[in-house]
Length: 382
Ligand SMILES: *[C@@H]1O[C@H](CO)[C@@H](O)[C@H](O)[C@H]1NC(C)=O
Ligand SMILES: *[C@@H]1O[C@H](CO)[C@@H](O)[C@H](O)[C@H]1NC(C)=O
Image 1 (cartoon, rainbow, N blue to C red):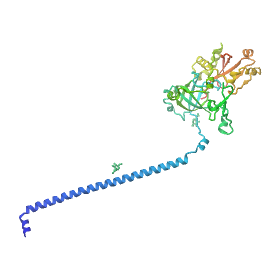
Image 2 (tube, rainbow, N blue to C red):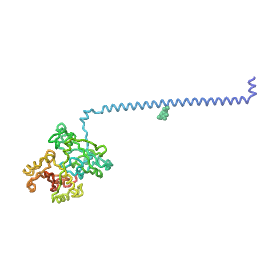
Image 3 (cartoon, protein in one colour):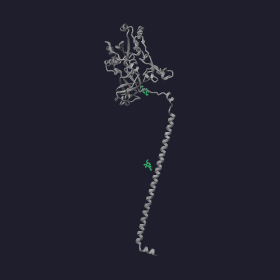
Image 4 (cartoon, rainbow, N blue to C red):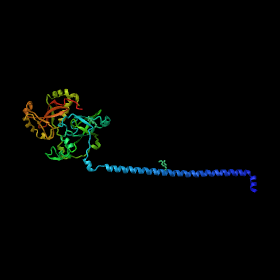
């Protein structure tokens, strides 16, 4: 009865108690909800961490697999030293040199000796777009890697390497006929007939690179060019064997031109001049002077120039030397001057113009005449 009474007596209290209990229970449920949500959040983080770690593990496994596959591929693909020594690397020239030196004979033996020696490196446009030449003009000089394409034993060297008789030693001028290992020389006759030279960069014109100071013969195939970097390429304090000093290019005392030389050159110029890399016969004559400013004869010619005298008596036979193609033509009947003096006439062919000259024992050069070489006629070969 009492509780009923209490209820009856204190309805307001009952209501407020109910409100309190409701709000308490709602506070409680909010509390529980918060706890639950915190638990859920932490569970989510756990799951996320698990997911992350398994993703990481997967990635690591994949990386490991890729690495293992790579290592396997490399191990399978990597050739042995023996395989490497037996392989060949076909390299196609990037371009061909159009040079003022029509023949090997007369081509300087080292670069930069003849500043007027000009050449155009004509790139194969289908392989070397002009953009490849961007920036090369900012260098004064560049290296040129080329093929000694005039070596007579090239075919044999490539087709039947076992049958080509490469000499391990080559005769060195000024070593009294002594021979030295081929790799101690710059002889063109080497196991890989590759040449290296440096030239002055003059200008880029489309897919052509204009050079000067070259020692390259006309038609030389070029494999690569690279900029010359003085800070690393110019070696301070580099040493050479003493015979190299003795083998230095011999400068001649003076180069004189015969009185009627210029007129013979001018008549050649009328035909060949339009395709020349030189602007006038006068400039071309300067080139001749620079080239003949060095004794360009082979050592055997230099040492025994009177050898050719015997040939002279045989009636103007072409004279062959060991080192060069036909480069001495002993003069005979029909050329009274030489018939009387018995002097040897040498030939230098520049841009297809055959320049004949004599050189005496004191190394004074007399340039006699110029004539067009048949087969050239100033034709553009590129
Ligand atoms: C899981 O990785 C994601 C993205 O890489 C990152 O944002 C998250 O914080 C990581 N979670 C945990 C729990 O490591
Ligand atoms: C230029 O190179 C291409 C591709 O190597 C070759 O087929 C083509 O004969 C070359 N052209 C000349 C003119 O050498």
